[in-house]
Amino acid sequence: MLQVARVEAVGAYTLLVLRNDGGEVGAPGQFFMLQADPEPSGAYLSRALSAAWADAGEIAFLLDVRGAGTAALAGAAQVSVLGPLGRGFELHDGPAILVGGGIGAAILPWLVRDLPGPVTTLLGFREQRHAVCAALIDADATVVLEPTYVTEPLARLLPVDATVYACGPDPMLQAVAALCAEHAVRCLLAMEAAMACGFGACYGCAVEIDGEWKRLCVEGPVLEAGRVLAGGHDG
Amino acid sequence: MGSLATRFCGIDLAHPLLNGSGTLDALAAGTLGVSAYVTKTVTLNPRAGNPPQRIAETPQGMVNSIGLANPGLERFCDEHLPRLADLGVPLIVSVGGWSREEYAVAVRRIGAHPAVAALELNVSCPNVDTGCISIGTDPSETRALLERCRAETDRPLLAKLSPSVADVSAVALAAAEGGAAGLVLINTVRGMAIDRDTLQPLLGGGGGGLSGPAVKPVALHAIFHCRAATGLPIAGVGGVACAQDCLEFASAGANVVAVGTGLFRNPGLVEEVVAELPGLLERHGVSTLDDVVGRAHYHQGKALLEVDANHS
Image 1 (cartoon, chains in turn blue, cyan):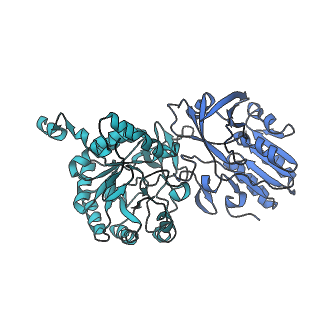
Image 2: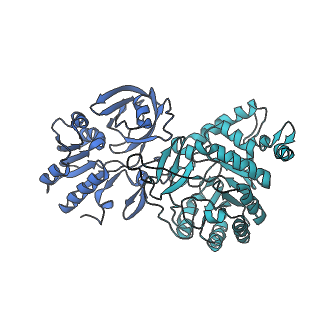
Image 3: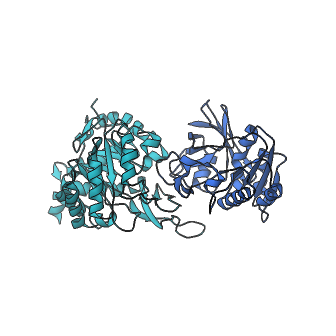
């Protein structure tokens, strides 16, 4: 059980910072199962969230408060945290392009901090109030708002000798994966699925990986794009 | 302080807490403290399971539409069973199928493995259209299935039944007559969820099975009546979330208790309940869970079902 250090509004989103007691935090892209204390009456399951950043002193999550579960987290006195779980980003040397869509941008600050090479950040949001969080990620980020898609600035950069790290809604990830495949650019996707347990027990988070339904919590949530690209493999 | 050690259908258990089938992958997550490990249901052929979305959160529970995803009998026996044999706890293998013969083939093969303490016949999965639950909704089919499988192994056979039938105690009685050594009650309750934005069915399989504390009263009712109808040992499942629940399930007629959905939100649940249980038993003036089993069937020395009969 970790104490809540602070809760801040970041535009349309909410930043929840927990005081870490030196517990292991894993790598960017891994995730945690979070449960608010006091427990919400309207949400039974834990919430699967990847950290915005994490170290021995604190673990931060950017929340899109939409229902009882996330609302309870935003108002919690303390939070039960299980993790880190799953497989995170493998950090490659050389230039990196970060692509974030909506609340998927939540996991990028940690990547920016840990990536060894130069970083270019491309972010897409519905409205300006969602884009406020760009300041947490990269002051020099390229930000687009709907109806412009984040794949437009990405397409202008390709081909490029860099690794693409992407997180966002499925259609965005598929579009990013397809672009990268077209230009033979290495691409890693952090995906999302409804999860009950987060540790391989419930089989609820099945996603089509390598052509079959597999558990995202075990195989991912970060996957090589070719493993999930609809209609075949890249490279 | 009493002991938690108990015996269920001839299997010696360190304590009365098991997992429900399909709620724990012990090869991925370990046994999480259960006294016997119940596998996910194995079918003759591999199954990919249902398309996503597979789970939906509901008030005090969740609806799942996993669809019996499993590697199939061959791979289960070759790759999983040898590793499961090393878990260090008795193994109960859950079996499903689309015909008596499919169950029989799986029971014969799995029952021959020395590490298997018992087999659970899943005749109650709500996430497949045919087989399985259509057997478990029919007492005579259930009796015939148990008789057929009884001929294939000397291991205890447990029948896992669905509460989504008109009279679960009639199915339980048929299972007992067919040779079941015990019952597992309950499988999930048929349910569904609608996406709040699109107003379409949320789950890829359309409907699903409801689990979690929401189904606890359904489980207690089924256990109570199946106990009265059969007298068979029962593993109670359905929304168990604390030590108090174990006492209530035992009182309804469960000899052991299995946790499932509760593990999803708290992988430490079994260890917590096992730690809490002795003190709670002591407060009730008993030393073992066995002392509580069936207590709800009697009130002031009179059997409740007899009382009911007198009033009808």
